[in-house]
Length: 237
Image (cartoon, rainbow, N blue to C red; front, side, top):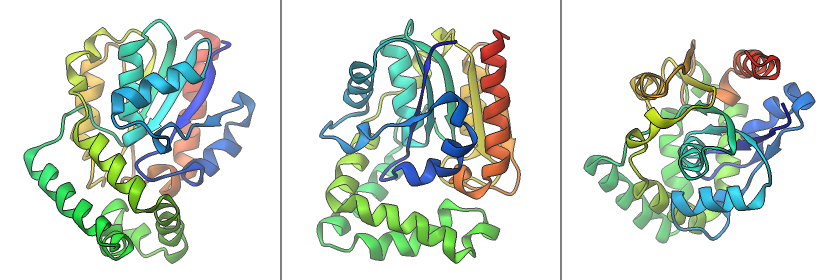
């Protein structure tokens, strides 16, 4: 298979969240995209920019917001997406409750209180065992801090206006892997199960003792699952 492997980070994240995967999957020459960090205002525009920026067939591996962009890219260009790996994400549109939570957060970002809010809520991104890992949590906080308030505002707005991907997932025909942490509080396992039920032939994997940041929390398990999936694709299984 000659498709290019593209790794899509989550909201405010960068290549840090894919560090372990880039090393483990080096044979596939993965590229971490920063399309979400560019000036696009919607998930749809981010997906279009991703497709425009890379020629040929693509293997899209997206986490959280990255998964939303990957699903939208598959809708826009189904013939070019040779495979989808969707980690800790949801196909559902924003709920009124989460919209209000994000609006409140955006106001705090505008006031220069972004890290105050992120530090107070960092625990929700991790399994309780990993939330006590100071080095892991610091790595997470650092890349959010690097993103800055402007990116946090713009990317949250894009997530708030995301399309309902459930309306097109039944049309997906490429091999699809869905993965989630068993203790994900931000996109609970039921969200991943829903995606797997909608995509014909999708595989569903649940990572034990893991929250939302599964690529960082359980890199060995995530790498093993991704590597086995990519090898099956290479064999045409």
